[in-house]
Length: 155
Image (cartoon, rainbow, N blue to C red; front, side):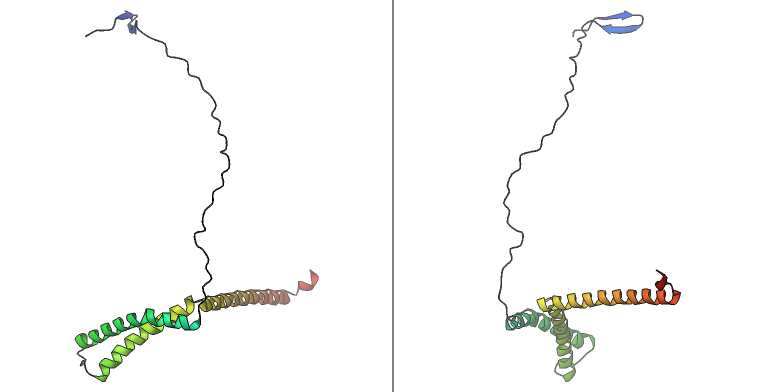
């Protein structure tokens, strides 16, 4: 093992093999914008013109809700037979089955009616009517306050 030669000058060790580091050169960093590139991307949603009639919508609604209404109706019937001891072959069991099925069918119909293009248009009209009604109410309240103060003619 080679030991460095340390000589002591006034109590502080100094190395005899010291090499001075190279000077640090600081250069300013320049960022130049990249050349513009043309990127052709597809639209995330391609609009398609689909001709759908009311009959097609009705058939699609019946296909989508018939199975759900049947399953919920059978579940309600099972609940009534097991939970409340309703006889399986009775008018009450039949009423429970059709009641649950009708409840699901009505909820699905309401959802489909509001989510259809006609329902969206209806919701938009109702919200615009609400906006106009609030604006009219605020305008009438402002006119009434001006009439009570009797300062509107001085302005």
